[in-house]
Image (cartoon, rainbow, N blue to C red; front, side, top):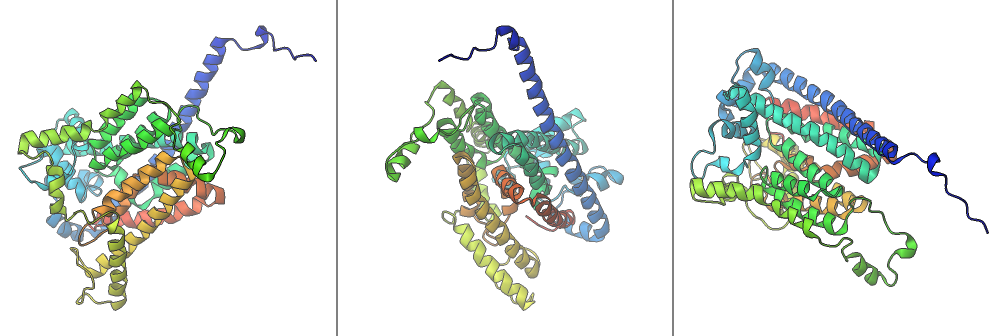
Amino acid sequence: MTQEASPPAAARPPAAARAALARAWAQARESEALRAAWRAFAWSRSAILLVAVFAALSAGQVVRDDASRFDIPAVTAPFGGAGDIAASPLARWDAVWYLSIANHGYGGADSPRHAFLPLYPLLARGVGELGGGGPGAVLIGAYAVALAAFLAALVLLYRLTALELGRRVAWPALLLLCTFPASLYFGAPYSESVFLLCSVGAFYAARTGRWAWAGAAVAAASGTRSAGILLLLPMAAVYLYGPRGGDVDPPPDRRPAGSRARRALASMRPRHPIRADVLWLALGPLGLAAYATYLGIAFGDPLSFSHVQELWNRSFAGPFVGAWDGASAAFDGVRQLLSGSRETVYFEQAAGDPLRIAAQNVLLLGFLAFAVVAAIGVLRRLPLAYGLYVVAALALPLSYPVAAQPLMSLPRFVAVLFPVFMWLAAVCEERRIVERVAVASAIVLGLFVTQFATWHWVA
């Protein structure tokens, strides 16, 4: 029996050529991700800005009357004339808080500003200093940070989706994220873009075995939102169980044999050993710890960021109790809408028109239903770490609901849960309905932008 000879050395590409080809392929993939990210970023952000400007101009005096109750024009409209027409329509609601912090700091003890963590306003202030440091420069800096972070997050999301689900799913994931109704916040002076970049960056770094970068990304996330600390849970799952590097599922003949219980126990055994590089994950809490230290030194209460949540009517109601409260609010909202009355209110009233609040409660229940279905889908279709992240991130707002509107801001919380859009892209790609879902979502996005630009609360 003869053995087939291997090709002569001269027939094989030399090591230098193979390395060059590998680098060229990597660069091509990187440019592919950047091109896809820029394509999704440019048209979606431009469309949102145009709709916002048109809505604000059309509303006219209505916008000025509503803004007088919530706005600080010195930080959201510092230019006057055409400058404010272009820069102010997305500087609404929480943007006022972020811009106030960037311009004037955290105020006194027990200030509501303490609920907003410092990384995003610090970055906005830092970029604003390059332009002179005035309110106008800070506003431009806030937009620049948010937009740059969103573009970078899209690049990493493309690469991460390609790793987990294949290149065919990568572009739909970007498209569906950019057309999600609450994606308007990725182009506003809000912290959503920075948090998205940190969370996607943490997963991508862990997935590729760069644990120092993963730890730093979690630290940045915990300095952007207190929920960033939850990223340590999926990071630990990736470290112990993967996937990372070249992980592949074992062939059938190497999978654990025996009863279902025995196989389940075997699957709980860590796939990767614990090494010294796990210590990089200890960086994760540093962002939140640094902020708590500052609050303790400056105001005598290191947990002020948590205590002031009462000023925002958020309190612990029990694990996931907010889901039940949100369903009850939506049921009462349907009763309110069917009655057509503003005199009799069927629910604990939030600020504003009872019929509008009722419609919002019904809409928010729809987002909750989507989030629950998506969480189940992520758990079934993606590695364990992604599902753990989605469930843990949803548990926080659903366990700390707002008294008058239990599901308030849920669309914003869902928007940064990028595994949801990876799963949605895979499902839509299989059914060849990506474009139809994106168009339907974009229509709702347009309605959200119109409401937001005219000082109506949408998420």
